[in-house]
Length: 113
Length: 115
Image 1 (cartoon, one colour):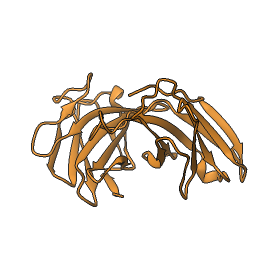
Image 2 (tube, chains in turn yellow, orange):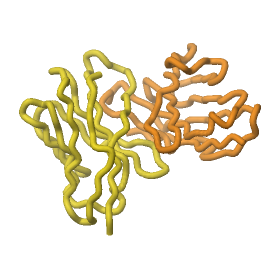
Image 3 (cartoon, chains in turn brown, purple):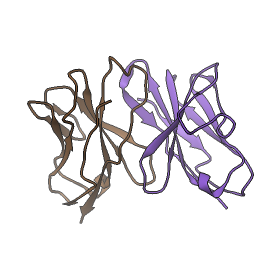
Image 4 (cartoon, chains in turn cyan, red):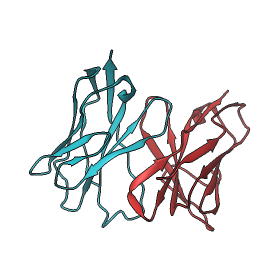
């Protein structure tokens, strides 16, 4: 799987939008961009994934650059409950069918009241 | 989606003893995995639990130290054998189903402290 680069930590104020960046300059054409997050004392949970087009779900939005070398996870209104480590992971279903996701260090998001 | 539970949620053990962690999924999953997460670190894959056959271990992890069972599609165990303080960590069970290879589900983890 191609490598991703994320900031070690970020801080946000409650009820403000948060933009979590991820760089993946060596992404291949078949790599999907996945985001997971790990809340304190819990296992990671799925947030969102996409290939080329921007994606929205009830948790977040995923904005993918036109060249796909970077992406941004957007939390529209951060809450205290969104404080977590956010992981950006590339994965190709063609070559990783049935294989586990590989987690990097991620970005630790702090949300201030 | 699948809900994964683990038992125990935490334990404090003596050096040289063994602990077996149980993982139960509320639906059948194709793949099951065991991870270790040391304090402040990311997740490291220990092994893939294969139903009806020996687990597939990652580099640095061996069957004698971390024996794994998976008798069916919803249950697996991980044993941490002959424990030392270096084994103090969080151990996480995870599953993935054939119908949704884009999503991997995780249990809440077992926090192990070895004295």
